Image 1: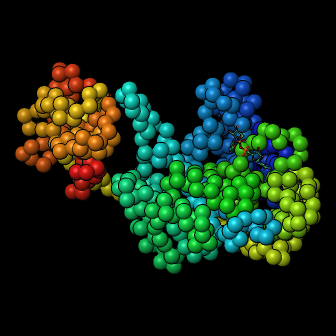
Image 2: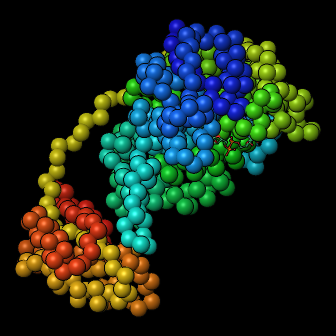
Image 3: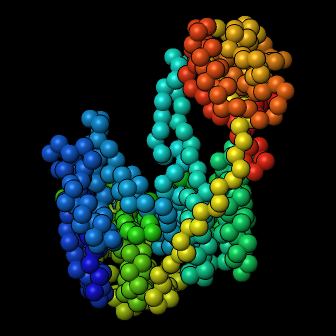
Amino acid sequence: MARITVAKGDGIGPEIMDATLDIIKAAGANLQIDEIEVGEKVYLAGNTSGISKDSWDVIRRNKVFLKAPITTPQGGGYKSLNVSIRKMLGLYANVRPCTSMAPFVATKHPVMDVVIIRENEEDLYAGIEHQQTDEVVQCLKLISRPGCEKIVRYAFEYAKLYGRKKVTCFTKDNIMKQTDGLFHQVFDEIAAEYPQIENEHWIIDIGAAKLADTPEMFDVIVMPNLYGDVLSDVAAQIAGSVGLAGSANIGMECAMFEAIHGSAPRRAGQNVANPSGLLQGAVLMLNHLGMADVAEKVQNAWLKTIEDGIHTYDIYKEGVSTQKVSTSDFAKAVISNLGKTPVTLKTVKYEKGSVLSFPEIKRKPMAKKELLGVDVFVHWSGTNPDELAGMLKSVETQGVKLNMITNRGIKVWPEGFSETFCTDHWRCRFKPQSTEIMDKKEIVALLQNALNNNVDAIKTENLYSFDGKVSYSLGQGQ
Ligand code: NAD
């Protein structure tokens, strides 16, 4: 018996959740269910997070959460509950299997069988954004080594457990050498621990193009948050429909399972929605709970139902489908197929007790960190970098001098090009002149000089080396 939390959500949520629960219970899932209310009603009652403290307590106690889609009201400062749940519970891995079911569901890619594993907590989704000048806003892209280690190891352990042959990594580390570079580096380190699984890395742009064009080249793909957010929808859609895909959000302690689509409010209350996406989420949940036999039974009965042409309106197609059914009749058809296996589609087989377990993340000892300089960002509405360089003479100290100015990362001083377009946001790099290492007090002195001379310093970034390795980017063109 497993105790789980269920939220029926908004829009089509209650209908597809009832259908899903009917199917998994009929398959023999031994579950004790605690139902909580999240979403629209909670938001509109004045709780901008969409969830009450009591509901958090239930989710944290039960650790496993099956959630139907919810409606996030537009505007009004309502926070996305999905993002809050993922981050607050540390659900670092988003797992989304995308398998085509040709010829029963139309797709250009009949042999596609890809699992996207998306990092779920970091990257630009930290949501740390600031306006810094009249013209420039920024979003911080944060990637941590433990974050990379957790997600990459998850991808390889997943591949091992489910008999997958290859793990591919997508990044853009030819441009983002620090952030995406770290993700790629950790991928290479961890891949070496799994010699039995093939590994490869693709630059995200060509990787995405290949995924959309020839998805059969890929098996498991792991990637940072933003790329994974976009490409997991692409992968689900080209496999057949986003309406057929489920996803798991896995953390060290807790896990949440859901459909990938939203609450489709226009279809609510009509008993027409396809419960397959949420059912796929529930199959991932049953495997997570160690109920591999029940998961297998549900998945094979579902495949058989799709294969029989018993389809809800969204995938119904004259000539392929045999019957257009309601949400509840689709559930009844799956239940009547429990114990059967598909004939054309591949029958699934899940390992008994297939539960992933991980070693604790071991933090590396602290590196020797040395300050090599500082980037002072300046808000200045002029256009000639030589003029700014002249002004910055007043900011220099006896030992620390202006080394370079960039505008949006492009070097504009010394020896910039007059063609380079400049905004009002200037990165001014200062480095010590006669030594390599800079005293941290110099930063304070530089900022004091800037203040005294009406130079509008808006932020600084320290330039470090870690264990002797220079750990910041050069200016474009430097
Ligand atoms: P949506 O996925 O809810 O619906 C888009 C369209 O897809 C619908 O109009 C419908 O035609 C179709 N569709 C979706 N699911 C279907 C199903 N199971 N069966 C049949 N047809 C289906 O996307 P949206 O309209 O952009 O968003 C509606 C609401 O859902 C918004 O408030 C959004 O914030 C929320 N949302 C929630 C989640 C979540 O809870 N995980 C995810 C995405 C969107």
